[in-house]
Image (cartoon, rainbow, N blue to C red; front, top):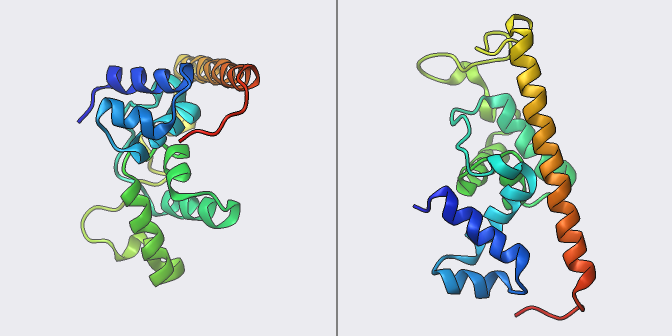
Length: 168
């Protein structure tokens, strides 16, 4: 298991050096597909890329993930990064279940135990949240948005300044 600092340093190396996924992954002793996933996470989530998300996903969320794959033609890896799902294989399992069971694949009524959390019984019901809490969230989202814009500009600038050569 890699810590956050290591993950960020590897992604930063990729963004700042002229090095391929494979070369960098070999250099630091890791799998290139894991590195690609980390880079996507940073692209979509910036500073919060490696902060673990809520890990019990409701059926509606799983369907939304699958719809992105099917409707947008997004890859499983890209979709996992977009939705900040740390385990790519989880998305693969959801997709397989969706293909086998269709609309009933994530039906909450067929689950055993406690019901899953829905928007109606969510801990963070927007109507009950304080103004300060919402303002803090807006501020955080704006900071994340600014970070992603800067990161995108840096990547674009790097791409423009480098002569086009094939990577190994």
